[in-house]
Image (cartoon, rainbow over all chains, first blue to last red; front, side, top):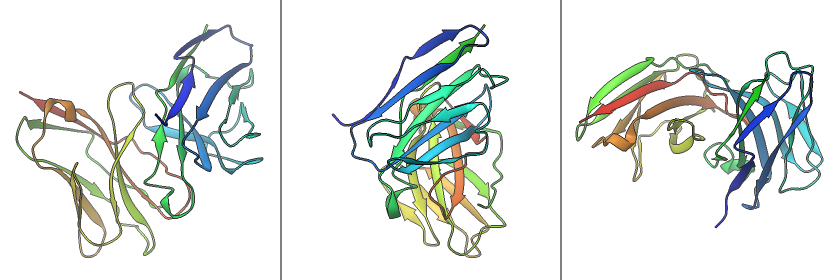
Length: 115
Length: 108
């Protein structure tokens, strides 16, 4: 079955450590996105990529970095510069082009806790 | 992208229609209205979208006012599994900006 996989589901890290969240899709989607969600809040866009080897900052990119070396993969690194990294992180992909905004498929998320 | 305003929460009896309103008074002519929902601790799921005509699919109906400044998502026969946060988004770009949505609670 096609889908989008985020791993791990739960992640614990010590303050000051960088951590990388994995996102892989086998839907042949061109576009991929990372969102952050805090308790009781909506989703906030961190980074997005419309094509391999290119990505753009979203609304809250500070303290995060991404890469898009393969179409299937869009890992997110939470660096030590991110002041409040504890959150629920969601990855999504979409076909791109005219079908972009209604074709979003989301992963099941990674819950990151920094202690 | 235009911003939207939704009530923070709503209740609906199981089997009844759930009507979720959304105001988007600053919507521009080429912006679509999208609805997604998020069941607790899962990723959001696409429901429906429209530009100016009313739309219906197997999940829901979308009613957009003639001036396009507001819309209503209708779940015709709500079930307990429809309990979720519903997001109304307007966009004409290649990304979606989610607000805080409406938390719909369906009760028996």
